[in-house]
Length: 233
Ligand code: ADE
Image: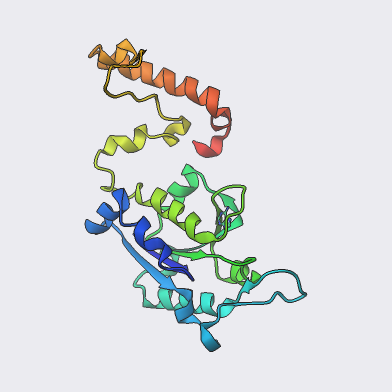
């Protein structure tokens, strides 16, 4: 998978992708990541990327030229056909991200991720350039950058070979629409709070059964919507 991110704040991404699973996957060349500065694609004076909204109103809107130019240039330079490329805009107006959407996005060979800023982006970008609008939740943050980090982290975990233990994907929260089972580690007795005996029993069949039951009970208690919502299955 190739991921290209378009942003006016490329430095924001530097430290985030230097750690953990993502940095290891980059080292192993399991995917490629390029961060592009939208200003480099601006044909305007002073590399301008925004302007006042037509019709008036507060704030600034991202102009179409830098975003159209950059997406077209990246597609032109790519060896993939358009059907293998997904152009995504992060915006609170988008489809709310969940594990099943994450998994459908992960089937593309190339992703071009646009981070919106200011009061939003010119509507023509949404209508004529972007394949998918994605929101990371029903709240507004200052721009698409942090949303893009969330999306990329979730996607990279799905790339085969990224998670050391193949099983850990299946057992993770949300795969099979259940939250994770409760996890314990040493010490056995922490300030009088003990680890359930069954986990020390050595009986793997019983442990698996217990974990399934606990995962179901936890989901019913904390996130009953996951059990009702077929989209998460
Ligand atoms: N930009 C601002 N808020 C956002 C959200 N909730 N999801 C994606 N991009 C955003």
